[in-house]
Amino acid sequence: MTNKNTIPNRQAMCNTLIETATRDENIVVLTSDSRGSASLKAYAEALPEQMVEVGIAEQNIVGIAAGLAHSGKRPFAVSPACFLSMRSIEQVKVDVAYSNMNVKLVGISGGVSYGALGMSHHSLQDFAVTRAIPNLQVLVPADRFETMAMFRELVKSSQPAYIRLGRNPVADCYEHADYGFEIGKAVRMTQGDDITLIATGETVRVALDAAELLGKQNISAEVINIHSIKPLDTNAIISSARKTGVVITVEEHSIHGGLGAAVVETLAMERDVVTKIIGFPDEELVTGTSPELFAHYGLEKNNLVKIAREMLGESYGDSEG
Image 1 (cartoon, rainbow, N blue to C red):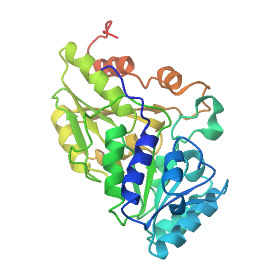
Image 2: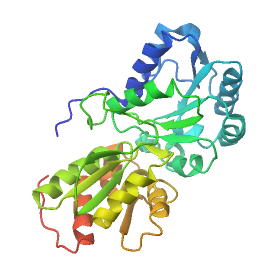
Image 3: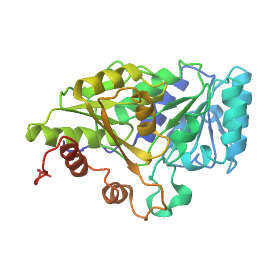
């Protein structure tokens, strides 16, 4: 699939929040030094009275958002994922989740989006941390259309949530936003009988491209998009795994504690299912752009095809790039 998309998910978020906040004055966006960034500049210009800039104070942004929610507002706290999910995690746990405040915590520039800035700016532990906090949803859209659909649902929801978004445009996985998005409901992107590829966020496109290559090699791959890591659609995972018996998970996250771990936990009692987790290793990563890191650590279509064929007991030859 040729990627003609030039709209990052964070911009799709911004456009959707403008669309909804224009009709609802209770929607408030808070940011920690991102008012002038591409993520929120248009919102700040359109609705300055419905924005709070707290500066570089990630713990404060969560506490202020919780206070606004307590007073009846519908706050979206937008901050780099690496800081929002780690520096402010106590406030997330206590002020938002434990207190059941209607706060949407939006981690922008998630995963390895910051690329060459290295480990201090990567957020590869956020799924592990946030999904372990009771009463907190964990959501990751695959493309701009799913981002739009997700945020349209989030403005109607009263449940605390952590949402991770990337920094750069990603290839479309959907043709439009009106496909029936539902929090907690996985999406079967392709149907297959030989192997299941379970992905989240920007790796959904990788899984779709791998499935296309596998199809050319007469291997039928089912692709499941887990946009809701919590609540997790365990029925979709178990159903597909029982059908194919072979599962690969792929995610822009550490191999520990994320989507792969959640899937393995779900399939622990399925004795006839073989699983493999593809993610970033438990080590200090090399630096580079997001695509370079994906390629270096095997989060790309040809590596998924290779692993799939190995798991199916087939030799791997050259595939179409």
